[in-house]
Length: 279
Image (cartoon, rainbow, N blue to C red; front, top):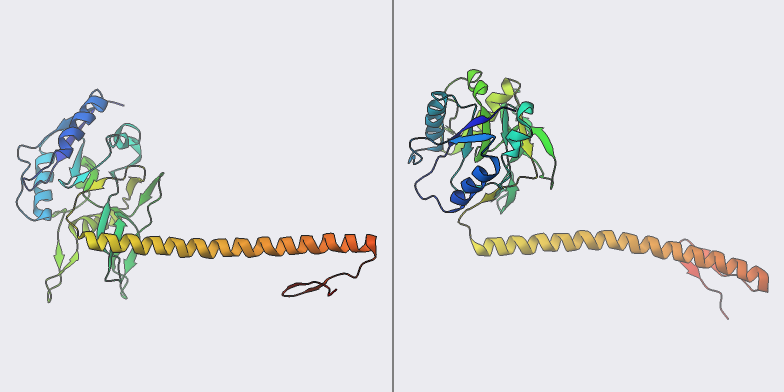
């Protein structure tokens, strides 16, 4: 594979922490002979996400770079994230790495940890595509999905030749002014219309730095632990009951054979278990 030039679409608010300093150092050491990182003139964009991303795309298209890497200032991927380029370049037009979110799952009010992997289009009654469902994230493996989040997303130059401007756009409810479509999922819906799916590597889960309530995290951890205990209890009870039934059957069969040899009265077997003969 020829050396690739990757434009760094870093939409920072000016408060970058040291995680990226070390990340970029590691990437240069590991991939410097295969990948050239090209940085924008200005990393700080104190604007809405969609406007900032569109500015980055315009700057990227003015260069000779092969792809743009959107990397949000609060997201830090593993240092082998460029394997998406060196190992899988010919497979995808858009690729990404998942990261956790702290938010209520659709249809719920309590926050929980979800991951930015989306697969399965949601349609309204008229058949219009209005969203994409979140999926479970396994520990490893690669897959093509309907969407990944832009916090860690690679997009090849050719994609922007197929998608109309604005590439990224927040959409709001006209009455409540609440966001009804984020700029990243909206972009992926546009890709879907062009038959473009997103390549994701589940072994590259990123860190995602956020301010959260520790009490909420504590309650969530307790709830998850309780669910696991209950699931384990349900599973182990079934295994124990099966083992007891097998042991009872074995004991009955051994008792039956022993009784024949010794001429003893045999225990009676019922649907609820064994009833031993009275002495």
